[in-house]
Length: 117
Image (cartoon, rainbow, N blue to C red):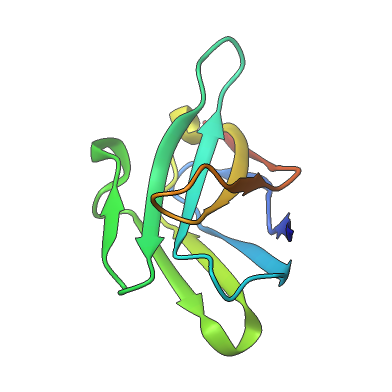
């Protein structure tokens, strides 16, 4: 099993920055995908950014150029650097770990991000 703990959320003004962290523990050696998802009130959960075992990344169009996903393998931690934040980025942000081509996945408990205008 893999356990994920997110941190770094908070309240920030529009134009500001936050860095989210997703710390993984447990049986992490076979995880080859980490994604950041978000869910705003009344909306479906959506993918924000993801990073694969080979380092390949992808981003939602709405965050390209503003958000950067990265990882520190030594710390088993994936980061989401969020710059130029907008009120529409307000949501609960969740970390998701997967073993691609299997049904296994794990979710963190989420961290709240609120961007004021």
